[in-house]
Amino acid sequence: MDRGWYWRLGLVVGVTLLTIWFLIPSYYSLFHVERSQRNNLAAIDAAMPRWAPPAKYRINLGLDLQGGIHMVMRVDTKTALEKRTERRGDQIARYVNEKQLGQVSVSTDPDRLQVTLTAQDPATMDAIEKEVLSNNQDFSKVSRDGGKLTIALADSQTTRFREEAVDQAMLVIRKRIDKWGVAEVDVRKLGSDAIQISLPGRNNPEQAKELVGTTAQLEFHMVDDTTDFFRQTYQNTPPPEGSNITLTTAEGFPQLEGSDREALLGYVKGKVPQDRLVLLECIASATRRGVCDSYRTYLVEKEAPLTGESLTGADASLSQLNEPEVNISFDANGARQFELLTEKGVGRRMAIVLDDYVQSAPRINERIGGGRARITMGRSGGRPLEQWLADAQTLALALKAGALPAPVTTGEIRQVGASLGDELIRKGGLAAAVGVLCVVVFMVIYYRSAGLIADVALLLNGLLILGGLAFFNATLTLPGIAGFVLTLGIAVDANVLINERIREELSHGKSARVAVDQGYDRAFWTIFDAHVTALIAGFILFFTGTGPVRGFATTLIIGLLASLFTSILVTRVIMTYFVHGKNAQTVSV
Image (cartoon, rainbow, N blue to C red; front, side, top):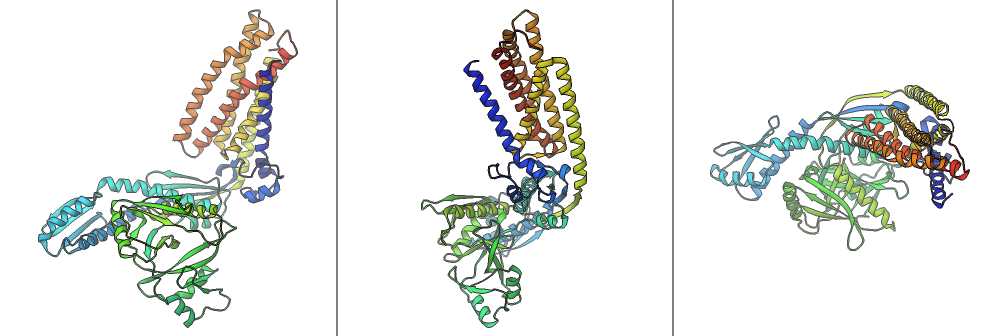
């Protein structure tokens, strides 16, 4: 036996042990924890031995195998476009007046997505028209009648907005579901204005509807931190006993803080001036991610002069002083609005609000032009840099998630029974077991000892497929089981090619050693080409398909790679041991 054989043997043993190790979380999640805890990573980790891999390396069962919730959400792009037209009309009129091109009034036709500007002095409309059309490429001219100019959202803009609204809604929904802890969620576009969501293992449709039923709204509000509203409210009408509401100046101005969100909002209800709003900031727990230890109030101006629809990017990074920051950028229109907003608000705080929560309230130090800004997070309270950077990344994600809001409604919601999943697992498992047993018996009868070696490789191939699914945290669906059985058939086909090639070499009078070596060498490229062409098809299915098609493609790709490993390497290691190591004169094939 040469050194190459020992190296290949070590590789086979190592891969086999590593595969078994990665399957431990799958075994415990399916057979050692209750069904209700099957998706609870903490419960699985607690049940496993310490030397086992983390629970995230496990095979997830799809909606068709374990039951769950199926939802279809409709994205109301029409309403979103109407609101966008109204906002843009107000912004354009404000821009014209601030540029002193002339005084204009604005009216909108939401159904037609049109904005009509009426100049007090018709003689100024020529200059207004030129300025508006040159600086607002998302609008096109409809008509001009003296001092009235009618413009409408360009067709290209409405098409782009509709597509991006659905894509952005998908990102928002996935972000919310990820916070819920559903790791196997399937969120994909359905048609042109709908989103299909599968939540395996969940059994509360109303909770799911509440979770994803609204779309994040990103707004920028100026903070009113010069008044003594919260201090006076606290002193004049002290909060009820047991509410745990306190007065704090942690941010440099009076604020209210409490552990109960509803108690805080209820306390200030009816006391807020008409042109102001009270919004809350979540004070995140230092030990429990995604949990609010307390809430802090902000008094902000009711009007939101800038919304997230103008935001084009948000990225977290470290500054030259090694402090976390979030860099944001706006489109051309948003850049102008942001510049005007910061010019008027130098020295004041600007609240970045997502889903009615203040994500950050940085102080404006100077007028910011160019459509780019930086939100410095700062570092205080003894928290490590990693936690501050994680907060910056969370803020960047929140800003991106709210960049293109559109109303979302529930079109369909139903619960898929888990009993159906158990039945499918039993039937699918039985079909796979019967198929494998038939192949194993046939190989032993037809190819004798070589067939038995092929059967060992076949069983290892199945183990490798399951281990690969666990390593990539893939979701196993019923089509995935079909892909599993199919790849086992492909693996058998490769061994058939090798055994037939060895038989042909023996029929030409060659010795056992030569027949085995040449049989594997000459069958290699045929097997390799067949697997590569099938892999190409599998990758095409994976990148172009959705849902069950991707589940089938994932299992197929992993199975093909496992088939190459077992047919070319594993069987050759075993065959070489019996022929070369035992100095056999014949081959039972």
